[in-house]
Length: 288
Image (cartoon, rainbow, N blue to C red):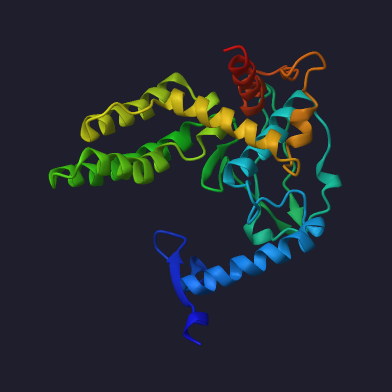
């Protein structure tokens, strides 16, 4: 039947694909098929939910890229505050060809690192890694990630200017900005926005001001979007009992009020990470 027919489109993973593995197959199905799958999913999800890994972020309701990155960074920042050996407890089977070693060591006197080997195969050591579209640097700053976002934002700003040259209305320009330009500049901003250097913040705000001039209306600054999304993400975690960070957040619930207590942070990295910043914003919103 035609409604069960799918069209598979190969999307390149790399700028210059040279092998079949360099493509990601994206399946395009009919609306009837999507509706049928949704009906089946609603019946299937309650059955398989108890057997899913608690750290399954993909294809889960109310979970996404930001949740996965925030969870990873929260583990890293907490580990820097309280060193512990956790690798031996994870019991993971790793694909060595896709595995990279990124060592985070912020000490002045760094100890030599023994190369990691899995099944006799050495794992490549890298200074930064692109995780779910976000560049994570071993010094836990976001300069490289900002560079990537800035370049992508500049290229998309060109198309915004081209649209204006066709006398497109401000409403349509605003929609294009939010869906194409802002989605690139502010991608996963709740994960990294609170740790940006002032110079990087100014660079991204400069792009937003340029877009504002093109659209013809004042657009929200990086800080405004960051605070709104950070607070929204914390609220979503608190409303979702199955979220991997739910218990972590609930442990900070005050016994005397609806406020949250701040986690103990001994490093500046941890102090400016998502959870402490989000808790501050949440407590401030209660007093307004």
